[in-house]
Amino acid sequence: MTLYAWLMLGSLIGPLLLSFDKKVAFYKTWPALFAGILVNGIFFIAWDAWFAVNGIWSFNPAYVWDFRIMHLPIEEISFFVVVPYCSVFIYACCKAYFKDDFLKPYVSWLNFFFIGLTGILLLVYHDRDYTFYNCLFAFVLLLVQHIWLPMHYMTYFWMAYIIHLIPFLLVNGVLTAKPIVLYNPSEIIGWRIYTIPVEDTIYALTCLLLPIVVYEFLLRKNRVLGDHVDK
Image (tube, rainbow, N blue to C red; front, side):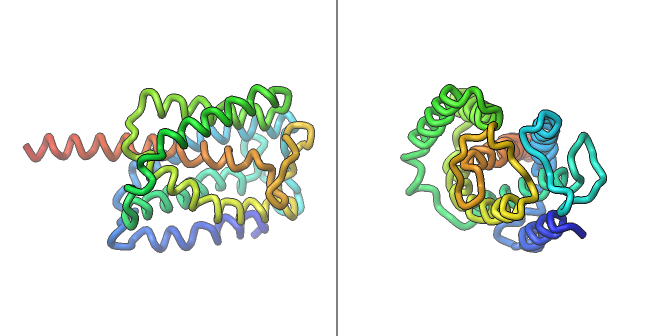
C-alpha cells in the first residue's frame, strides 16, 4: 500500500462505519449519494487528467502506484470517491444533528461573497490555469445554484463546507507536505495554508457542492414520487 492509498483508506473508515448511525441513516441515501459521486467523479477526473497532461500538477512516484488511468494514479481516482463520500457524510450529519436557523439569514450573503470572490480571482489571475479554472467552475456552479436551483439545502451546505474544511485541509496537508501532489508554481497564486495552495479551498467547495446538488435533487425526486404513491 502506498502512502496515498493508506490516506484514502484511513479517511473513509470512520464515515463508512458511522453511515449506519440511526439518526443519520446515511446508508439509506446511498443510491442518491453514489449518483452524485459519479457525476462529480466524471467532471473532476476529466479536469484532473487534463491538468496532469498539461503539467499543471503531477504526482510523486515515491508515494503512488505506477498504474495509471487517464494519466492519473489509481489513488487519485479513489480520491473522487472517498472525499465526496466523507464530505457529503458531514453534510448529512449537519442536517441530522443541527438546526439551521442561526445561519439561514446569511445564506444569500455567503452566496454573493463567494460568487464575487471567485469572479474577481478568475479575472485577476486569468493567466494561472489552476487558479482560473478553479474559480471559474466554482463561480458558475454557485451562480447557477443561486439563480436556478432550490435554496433549501444551502444553509446546511455552508455549514458542512466550513466544518469539512478541517479534515479536508488535514488530508490535503499530507498530500502537499510530502509532497504527493506537486503543483506547478506558475499556475497558482502562491498563497498557501501551511503547504496547501489557497485555491484548494475553492476546489473543496466545488467538490462538495456538485455531488450535493445531484444528491438533493434525487432525494427530493424520490420524496415526491413516494408522496404520489402514498396518495
